[in-house]
Amino acid sequence: MKSDYYHGLLEKGTTIDVDQLMKTEPTVGGDYMRMWTRVLAEDGARDWGDRFGAFCFLSPSDVKAFFARTGAKDITAGVESYFADKFTADPAFHEFYSLPFKDEHGKASTEPAAVQAKKLEQRKQDFFRFYTIRASAYYSKGSHDEWNIWQLLNELRVRGDERDHFGMGSQIAGYFEGHQVEPGAAESLISAGYAVTQSTPGSPAPAGSPKPTVVAQTAFSTSAIERLARHMTRKQEGQLTIVTDGPEAEAIKQMYDEALVAFRKGDLEAVLGHWEDDGAYLWPAVPPSIGKAAIRASYEAFFAQWTAEEIFHRYEIEISGDLAYSRFGTNLTLTPKNGGEPNHMTLEGIHVLHKRPSGWKFKVVIAINVPPPVA
View 1 (cartoon, rainbow, N blue to C red):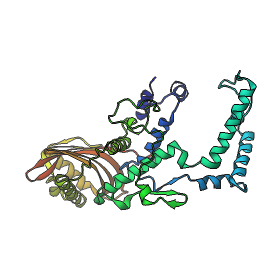
View 2 (tube, rainbow, N blue to C red):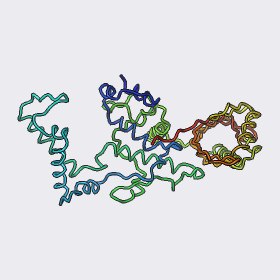
View 3 (cartoon, rainbow, N blue to C red):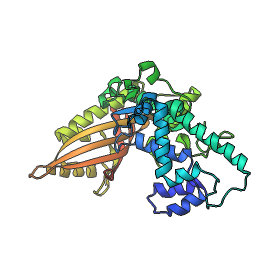
View 4 (spheres, helix red, strand yellow):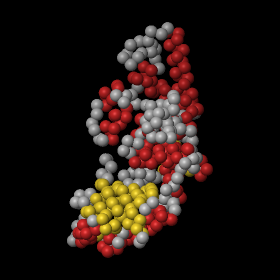
């Protein structure tokens, strides 16, 4: 079965037989990147990596400190001690570095003993060479991709609107060798590890590439990966366009600011002034409100019951003529006016806007609840 079939099941939360999956579709580096991109980028709100305060990339000093923890005088002695301990305690490790070689079913290799002995010596040399001189982010495919995800997240943050708590000061810190990464390096992409870039979603990967399960091809209902993939593709093709610039985008942002102030104050008329007469308001756990009269009734009931505090997150804005759409996120704290504990909601949604002579108005607002992360 195709790996994208299993990925689709996972995105839908379907229970699958993991043992059968591993037999049919063994994991590859791209599967690791699919999982880790979600971990690094998604945060339940803006999807710009807000769960992380810093990225710390494995350095040669970190590796040396790990192998010196038992009191070894140098890294060579530390690796030798580690190898000996693991060879004794780990059956799979012991088998991999022992003769005769065996296949996955435990059957002994039929290769000549001399050939096996030469291969075993090479295995040991590779192990010692890697851990004594190469073990760090420099030589890790996954670390290279993680670096690029970190760099892209920060590039998006720097270009974001400071009114939405983006900008230069919102960048995620990065550390290597115990120090912050210097600005020039922090703003540079490096060679990809498992990542496969492509100009058109769904197009074949370059010949010789790993399975198509990396950033640009893993966007199955995953907004964070889709945005990173789109940004990466545009950047590498020299076609990156920031769609939140220009006078109309600024006018929309200004309208958002005014509407947010009115909502926080509970100013019903000011809120309704930003709506189209035939607008549609589709909000979780309440009936749809179609038309300004129904929208008025919804807001009246809301303001009568709750005092609202809102942290609003604007994402991309795209404009075509007198229509525009914007994806948004919001963190709401609703305190009952008749007393009681506040309620907290995290929402993600879409705004469709229509330009009128008096300015931009809400045409459609659609929002869904974002469930809290599973502990």
